[in-house]
Amino acid sequence: MLKKFVRYYLPHKKLFLADMFCALVLSLCGMFYPMIARAAINRYIPQRELGPLLFWMGVLLALYSLKAALTFFVQYYGHVMGVRIQVDIRRDAFEHLQRLPFAFFDKTRTGALMSCIINDTFEIAELAHHGPEDLFISLAMLTGSFFLLCSMNVPLTLIIFAFIPILTGFAALKRRKLSRTSMRTRREIAEVNADLQNAVAGVRVSRAFESSDLEIYKFERSNTAYERARGQQYRAMGEFFSGTGYLLDLLLLVTLTAGGIFAYKGAINAGDLAAYLLFVGLFTEPIKRLIQFTEQFQSGMTGFVRIQELLAAEPERDDPDAVELTDIQGAISFQDVSFRYEDGQDILVRLSLDIRPGETVALVGPSGGGKSTLCHLLLRFYEPIEGAITLDGRDIRRITRSSLRRNIGIVQQDTYLFSGTIRDNIAYSSADATDEAVRSAAQQAALDDFILSLPEGYETQVGERGVMLSGGQRQRIAIARVFLKNPRLLILDEATSALDNVTEAQIQSSLEALCRGRTTLMVAHRLSTVRHADRIIVLTQDGVAEQGTHEELAARGGVYARLVNPSHGKTSA
Image (tube, rainbow, N blue to C red):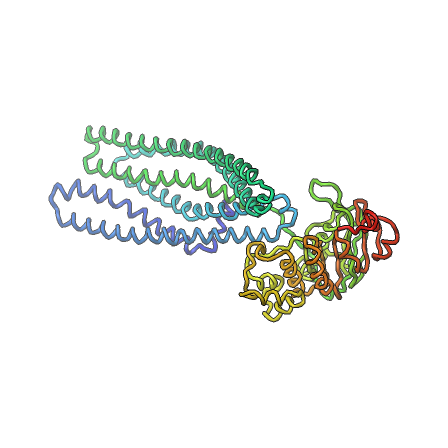
């Protein structure tokens, strides 16, 4: 794990080395004061040597000025380096997220992912900056202090340094508990974020059903679990810091006691003892840094472990021999395709279906028959567990996902609009589209007049998920998006089922224009939208129940006829 963490320093190695050099000089600057104080007490003050005393005071002033400049560099550029590493890790995580299969998102809560990518990377940034710096300064100061103290009195130095194994052992013992509680806290705050995101996204539903109390209860439950986990973490931190603080206080007591005894016996003079006490004060500083590093290491590495768990999730991969899709005719074939979702029942069992180039095929039938699943399989959002899907006779597993999806347009029931302008959302399928191309697509979707009637026209903000627009307007933007993309294959997945009858009738002409000249797979519950399809396929949990034109199936008196006339001629809605 450490090797993976260290590699993030490589792009910033110059800044890292400069930070470590400044940290080293800072640690050396701190060692001059006790030595100058020792000389002043032992020599310059007793012998009334004012010149050398003032000279070394000037040296100290220069060192303190240098120390201030180095501290600024370490604080500023060290944090900048940490943020850059944080940005790199966050970028890797987000890019990996974009390549993960739909199955990953089916079982992972959005809020938990946000917590991992935002909160955990912040802790990683703090470790990336302070961790090596604290460790390096501490080791340099401990090493330098050891040799300087040995030059004054070896036995007293050995007594002081005998405390280091005790401190190290205690820190290692408490570190494991701190690690466990830190990991649990991260997981609980991820649940809090997930509940918060879920509640905010569904606020209209909870208000409509007067379920605010339920949402408050669910949030309070996860929030209380976080409180308990955080309390246990703080308990572990309290034990850690109080124990190490107590040992450091004992170190000062032992130093003063042993130094007093040595001075009483004449083994050390007053100046050396004063320097010793000053050095011990400096000596405790790197130990405190090491203690702080231990806590920070646990917090940062816990976050890094969670990031690595995300990065370890298997992304979508193209086959080594996959090729780019070009010159599409549009013939689609499902050959003995079987599929089930994870831990679920079979959705498709050995289903076979052929669609001719340019044909509009409607999929109808009861929920759970696999209509939307077929569309998802064609887009390779999921992979069949058996069988094959071919496009123009080529297995789509031998086609790169990017080129396959570039050639398929989709309009779904739940139209997702991104925060931004109307123009941004239409141009989402083609980021480099010109204003003329965007407007042409809007005209084809019968949306241009509405947009121009708005005060800001195409620069009108749509709000989060498009809440500033009506359902029909959002749906027209989705249609315009596909017109701009101009794909050879088209999927209409219940594209009008969320609309009222009047709005559906207005959009129907745009959909018919969109389907013209394209191979189209249409999923619908409203049978009025599929009457003009070239072929209607009735899918049930047993597979293809029947297929044909609207007239043929209505006259046959089978499943479709019962859907059309469920009760003496009433049309299913």
